[in-house]
Length: 91
Picture 1 (cartoon, rainbow, N blue to C red):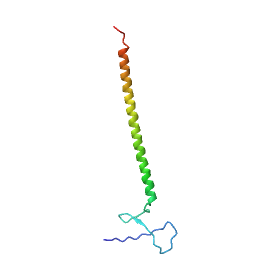
Picture 2 (cartoon, rainbow, N blue to C red; picture 1 turned 30 degrees about the horizontal axis):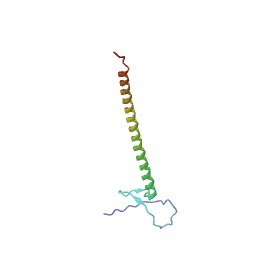
Picture 3 (cartoon, rainbow, N blue to C red; picture 1 turned 180 degrees about the vertical axis):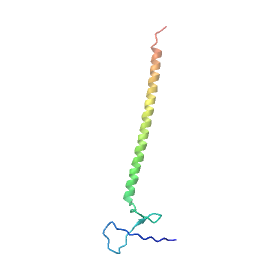
Picture 4 (cartoon, one colour; picture 1 turned 60 degrees about the vertical axis):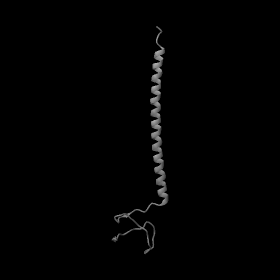
């Protein structure tokens, strides 16, 4: 069943009285802002993609640095143990 709503809308630009204007409403019939155009959607999508890329890159770099540090510490620990074996005085 179609519902009828009556609201006063103030146009954002100069309009001639009686001229047809486009308005946007939500599912409940409330007035909303203008529908985003293609350029705004593109900017939003590119910004989101850059954010996801940056977050992913930061995570990968952090995990790589953590793995490098752990492997390096383990290698130095084994190296020190080997030196202790060779550093013992002969019997």
